[in-house]
Length: 86
Image (tube, rainbow, N blue to C red):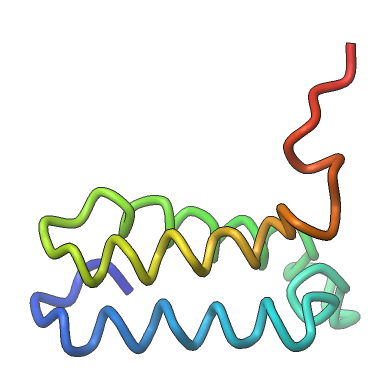
């Protein structure tokens, strides 16, 4: 997502990940039955791409990536995401 030079493509990519994370977060967290594709790697790959996009020089890309990360990490619905256990 972040490797393309055009922000006109990076913004919709971030918005697409946001839409998936918002409408069916279990799709990113549940396994597909394939041993090589685990839940953690799917969500992890999306999070890695979005984290890279939050450092983009284009403000629209950064903003879209920030909003997508909120939904991917389920900040509002899963307090365990942001609360550190001691």
